[in-house]
Image (tube, rainbow, N blue to C red; front, side, top):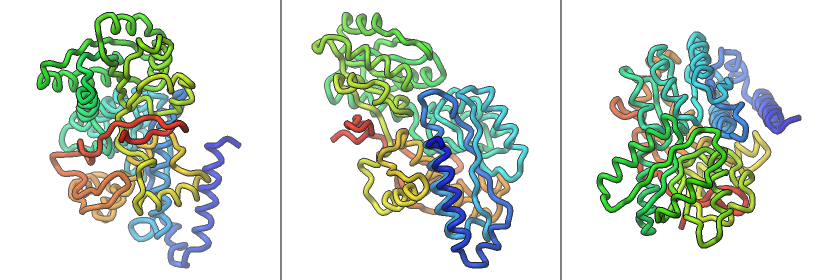
Length: 397
């Protein structure tokens, strides 16, 4: 039995336990039609664990909601999945199919901004709630038009670049070789960097573009050293990011540059991919959440539910921000469904814009969304982190 199937078996066992332990009224309520939430993400991308972590976040929140009777008088939440393999065309096909099922209330997208940017206008057209727990391109929540059915609980590239560049300047690293993917994510990051640089004229930026799938960066690293760059600012996922880190570590110790990274590299087992090279470089990664520093009542509750479902500790999980964001998004969605009094998407959409306060795993949401702001987080949740010896990320002290 695979690990993925193993935790599905645990989930089924827990559901049966709750079913037989519940009062008769709740057992009868369980016969009502379920509320379906879909995770439409990149399960099939080798090395990525983000889709799995996002799904776990939705499932943990759903388990907590179902354990107290579900929503709307006893409707249980069920989670379904679609594998878009990181391809916009597949993701769009899935979104269109899911939109035809009235029992699907919302769709969670995955980590890739190019996919989310393509999904946003389709979600608006189909009046399907699209919830973004990871993808960071600034335009995702702005591209859908009005009424806007896209809601994000994640960082944006502008916030990420601001945190990364401030970290560099605080360390007097004012000459940066920037590595960007030739995608809409890279272009979104480039725009954010340009905005920051206009306010900091002493910052010197040298842009290096690369393509997804590139594995050789030695020439670009050598050029950065020859041009007097003091650090490398990296926008990458784990595949290309691991190669950059290993090739930096292969340089003589005195020639290695500090690396400041966007969070794409945290979407899988980056430490396992890089191996010993990780301890030979100075690497900081932008983040919004880490179980290594979460110690409040909500984090403890989540850890207990997570252990009951998956037989492990969430501290060991990769792609923790995807989990935490999806967990909070699911609870916020549930509150919107209760506020609307039904699962009709236009009414749930409207309710999301007028939610009361909620104490979540990532933050206290005074008002998560408004008609003019579909971003549940802000700059205050963004911090820089480092990999610990066990491969997890913890905030820099």
